[in-house]
Structures are given as structure tokens and as C-alpha cells.
Amino acid sequence: MPCTRVELEERERLILAPFAQLSAESRGREYKEDPPEWRTDFQRDRDRVIHSRAFRRLEYKTQVFLNGSGDHLRTRLTHTIEVAGISRNISRALRLNEDLTETIALAHDLGHSPFGHKGEQVLNKLMSKQGGFEHNRQSLRVVELLEQKYPRFPGLNLTWEVREGLSKHGTAPQTKGTGGFKTHSLEAQVANIADEIAYYSHDLDDGLSSGLLTERQLEKDVRIWADAAEEIQRDYGVLPDECRRYFVIRCIIDFQVKDVVETAEKNIAAARVETADDVRKCGKPLVRYSEERKKLNLQLRRYLYQNLYFNPVVHEPNRNAGRLLEEMFGHFLKHREGFGDLARARARKDGWPRVVCDYLAGMTDRYAIQEHQRIFGERSKRPKTARIAI
Image: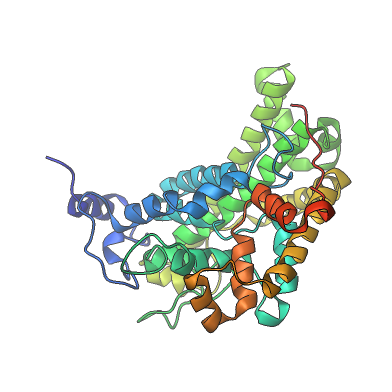
């Protein structure tokens, strides 16, 4: 006999911690639907995210290096998959709901603009008088409104708990009984910190692969790297370059995950939370780094900004790409004939700047470049990418 949703929900009750978010206790969806037969509601949400167009477009959106810089460098999609893997590991260790954490992780960047954080900054500036632009809020807009796959509702109609997890820097969706909440579920907190673990660790990897960072520099200036490199040298001796770098970065991720799990376990015990809603009423997140690890990560963060993110090889192509978004924003505000009925309906409610922003934010790097060339022709120059030989 197949395993039913009811049986899966019962497994959660038996296995998960009392403060985990059970799928059977979800606050539900904005538009009522019959529950799935062979999946929990959070498993259904995960599948909806994976099958969305916004998810597929992440393959051609910049993580750090402009898309097309190198075949082995990370894109927004590979980053997302790595976040999901780390999220599941932490959730499993804390006996939280892995399906919910994974879904939040897979959806967390659905609203990210093309051209990485530079693209986000440009759109935020362009939208400064209309409420700004922030990719977490845009991810919510994608799953609640912009994806059009179902006949009876806009968006993906995800559960309240997934949408809560996407409201990282904003107000969680309100529903009955949520007025006293001060923070998010533990599952959402895990996805948030896993995002940070993934992008710092893997940006190190891409920085080394590109030649913009060196191991000698890192051993001298970044204690996290020096500690991990020392442990790998002690355990394995001399290794080939690629293997050594891989194991050092794996070791860094292990250090981070171990610290988060042990610190969260202590915080949860000290807070004496007994339910998922007890967690939401806490004054601050319980899933966080220890104070020592937090200081080490700040050192790593400063190093990456100084030596990688603001390196001209990375920064200049992304800055030039941001100019494309500015020029197209002005063009589409004046030339609206290409927008369809759904976009026009949204414009009547949200205004044309928001509709144009939605369109630009949904573009991949390469489509944005192609659109700019189509519109501006001879005047359009493709942002130069530093082709990295790896």
C-alpha cells in the first residue's frame, strides 16, 4: 500500500521535536485546496517551487560573477541547491521539519534580480519612491502573484509557513492568531543562516577558482580558513590543489554547521519553548552562531568584500550591467504596448513602475542583455565578462 499523507503526518509527530512546525498544523493556504494524497502540504509546496518558471530562471542569474564568466562558477541556481542541502542537514540534526526548511531554501531567491546584488541595488534605487525593491519581498510577490500556473488562483498558493519563511526582512503574512509573533519558525531561521553559510563558503571557492583569491592570502588574513587548512594538513598531509581547496571549504562548512547546531540547541533549551508558536513569540532568533563564530564570520565577510566583491573583475561587469536595467526601466515606462492584460491589471492596482520592476527582476542575465540590445541596437554594449579559465 502507498504511504499516505496522513501516515507521513503521523511520522512527523513521532520523529520531530515538539517545537518543530508540523505540516498537519499548518495555517493553510490563502485559497482553499483539497490536501494532497501522497505528500504533506510542505512537500507539495516544494514541488510547486521546483516546477515554477522563476526557479528555472535562476540557472542564468548571477551569484557573484556575471553569468558566462566561467562554466564552473556558481549561479543563483547552484547556490540555491547548496542552501537547500545545508538547510536539511541542520534541520535534521535539530529534529525540525526538513521539508519546510528545504522549501523555504529553494524559494528564497525566486525574486532575485539579474546581475546579482548590483541589480538589486539598481532596482531599489529606481523604485525608491514606490516602496523600493528587496529580493526577499520580491520572492513573496513571485509566489503570491506573479507565477501564473493555476486556473483558480494567482501565484503558487503556498502554505502560510513557507511564505512566512520568505518574509525574511519584512512582516510575515498575517492570519488569525499571528499578531503576537516577533520572529519566524525555527525552520525559517535555519534556511536563513544556511544561506549565509553557503554563500560565504562557496564564494571563497569561486574566488580561488577565478584566481582573485589565493590560499596564502587567506591563511594570513582569515582565521576560519587558517584553522580549516591546518586541520586538513594534519589529517591528510600534502594534497593536490583542487582536492585540498575542496576539503578546506568542506571543513569550513562543517565548522559552521556544528557551531549553529550546538548553539541553537543551547538557545532552544534556555528559551524553554514547547511549540512552534512559542518560538515565534521569542524576542530574537534561536538559530544563530556562537559569539566567537560570529566574530570570525565578520572577519571573513570583510575580507570577501575587500578582495572579491569589490574587485574590479567582479564589480565592473556587474556595475555596467546595472546600467542596462536603468535604461530599460525608463524605456518600458514610456513604451507599455508590449505588456499583456495581466500586467495591465496589476498596473491599475500597483502602478506601472512596479509592473516594470517585476518584469526586469524576472529577467535572467542573458535575457536582460538581449532585450537591451533589441531595444537600443547599436548603442547597446554587452557587459564584458572576465572569462575565467578553470
